[in-house]
Length: 253
Image 1 (cartoon, rainbow, N blue to C red):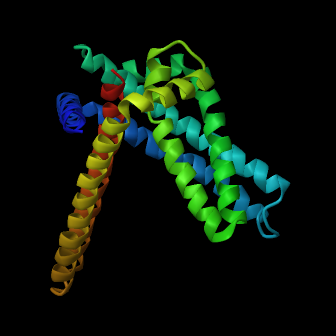
Image 2: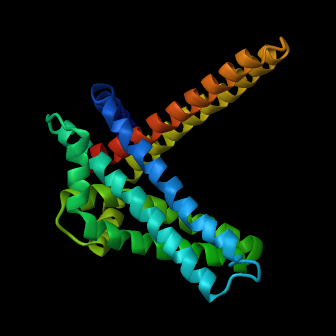
């Protein structure tokens, strides 16, 4: 266990070093977020306009839901692949650009779409279990969701570095979990805990600052403080997303 802790800490430090050396890697989570918002808007507008779910979850709703999951996963996996590709170049001593990462992701477009279809299917199944089986279904869905997240954590690095299909990538990622489960849990859990505490501190300190400034009656200053707090939280979220992608590349190597 101590060996796994030490190895996880070394991987986290290596990932942080990569991000410090190449802050442009944070552009990939930015592009991913903007693209997912665009996908959400694209689906949300017709769903509400046509009232597709006013009469419950029907066949049309299921098809729309699957299409939404598929598009969201395709976008997320594409930009994660670009991030992992660029991070891998950096870990190997190269000097990647944003264009390099996007080029790598484009070269893996078909496997990415295949994996997006698999992930969308899993997401739909978990959602169905959660909605149809009540409290027990939520527990089962949550447990299966955690298992799927762990088993598929290294799918993107596998897809990026290997010339294999999405099904084989999922299988290899699951097999690698047996060797890397400790580093996976410790590293990801540690990063998640660190940023969770950071977000908590930002909420407390930011909330206190906003209340303190609001009591002065200065609307401009209050708006400025609110903007600073929001920007700080968004920046922390981007750093966490970038660090997670880099860590997956480091762990796979």
